[in-house]
Length: 320
Image (cartoon, rainbow, N blue to C red):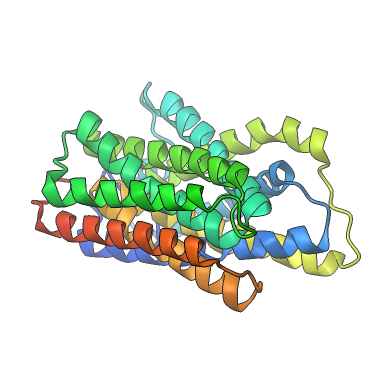
């Protein structure tokens, strides 16, 4: 079974959608670590890295589409082709723009303040923005538990800001992580809203979004320096290929398919796999050191969003 949904014929089961999101979250957690290694061994900047991630990921997705068509059996060809409605193109452009903001700001934050803090802030603030946005735009109830979780996450973010003068946290990097969280939240909320409308093709959405993101990032990447200079070019190339294949082509395809079915706040909770795995990699592999203040803010944010998970588990699932 392919990892792209077929909205016109078979609705993706919720259980499978949750599995897709779990795999996507775990894969995303490795992207920042790979980016950190690229920064350490080359002069590649965040815009160029984000461009190569999108462009190479797009090539892999396009290469996979014939295989997906051949495995679709007797399904109508339209099920794996871009949505023909007038809404399809504007939706793809908006998604691609937010995708470019999300991943570029994240890579910039990793470079500025380290993998652990950048990832925790991005994916810790994300659920707060998503929960509030879902309440305002999708009518999803926040509830008392959700409100407490949001307050706790904001408190954890405040602790990180308070420790911004320490060696592990840089306020500029935290602000960039918040910009990334904004892009991620907008992308999640829009994906969920359009999934409710029906007819959204996850395959076409993913391919189209990466096309838009790569085109938007290309001028900035050219100005920054498109090709890296490194004493270890093979290592840099291998890391770029990994970023394009696993936490990009695979993870985003799974994410768009799963996020169109699962509640927005639930998506944000599952994506906690990313900051947890990234923090482990930051300490164990990259040798980053977390101060007491940084660790306290991190645990408060993750604990609060875990509370949001419990609040979400008590809520009645919205109809797909």
